[in-house]
Image 1 (tube, rainbow, N blue to C red):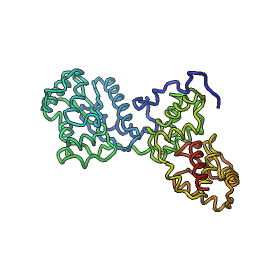
Image 2: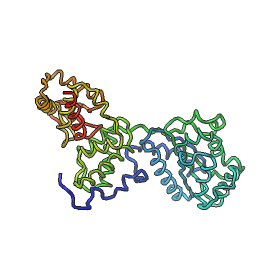
Image 3: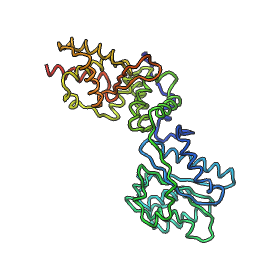
Image 4: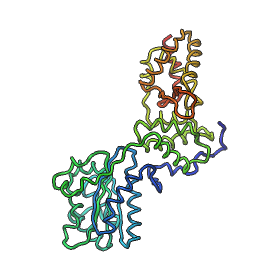
Amino acid sequence: MTSSPAGASVFKDIQKLSFDYVPKKLIHREPQMKRLRTLFRPVVESNFSQSALIKGSVGTGKTHLSKIFSSDLSKLGQEKGKYIEHVLVNCRQYYTEDMVLLKIISKFQPHFPDRGFSVPEKLEVLRKQINKSKCHLLIVLDEVDVLLKKSGSNLIYTFTRFDEEVPGIKASLSLILISQHDVFPLMDAASLSTFRRTNVVTMNEYDREELKDILVERVELAFFPGSVPEGSLDLIADMTSESGDARFGIELLMNSGMLTDEEGVEEVSPEHVRLAKAETFRTITEEKLAELDKGKKLTLLAIARKMKKSAYINTGEAEESYAVVCEEFNEKKRGHTQFWKYIKDLDALGFIDAKISGEGVVGKTTLISLSEIPAKQLEEILEKEIARSE
């Protein structure tokens, strides 16, 4: 690893790692996008209103999917001679009926007063604006469960029956709800009767390989070539695979790069990744390490020392390092069976990740990685712990 010139950075465009950046295409979300297009085709082709729910856990791409889809629907409408506008409201920020309506109206009237109009009056203003613009409006309510818990489902009911209020009017409003959870239990019977409950688009958690593909794409967009090696990317993919949260993986990638810049070097190392995770999502504490018996502490110290410059080591390398550590601390080296038990116990406790090697590795071996704490920091804590117990 070499030092970078003063003021140099591994980033060519750090904005491509921000939460607000929306890629042109979402990787591994083609089936969900196809489902939305099928559901909303009648909006463009048959003057029809539609409603749908996008459901999935944090970091599965729900909001980005809705943004890309909304933009694509507007473009498709333009091609077909139909004017389609869209507006996204985050209900964690705008959590009452009044606030939601104000946010939607501001799409048409940016300086609309935030006081002096009741909810029914705001609905009438919205209707007039839509008619004046001669558009079909797609409203996306993100984190809608917050609105439903705070204010109930009256507004959802109103939106789903928006065109029924004025006989003979063309379909003018469609609705997409976004939530981490099933929101139907939060709706009253009237709302459930008008919302199309079969129109659910489920966003499953990303698996490890899908997360890796997403990270590779963001590296190409945000970093200079060669600044993020394969081992560091693999480590981030492993760290985020349990949750399937792409957002956390991208945040981890960005923070790793920022730590690299702080150090003034040209390459994001596994140690930068581990340090970024320790700062972003600290789960291992000195108290937890203190609870380990001496055998496990020595084994973990051996692994930490071996991994300061590596993303992964195999069990043979770990056991060699363990023998050296035992000699240093005048401790009797345990046999292979007991050492293997230490490895399995540390894996189960979450201090290390141990997995069987995949394709490209001759024979089968167990690869070990640190996912919760930087190796250097772990080494320092363990050395103090072991010395204190002498």
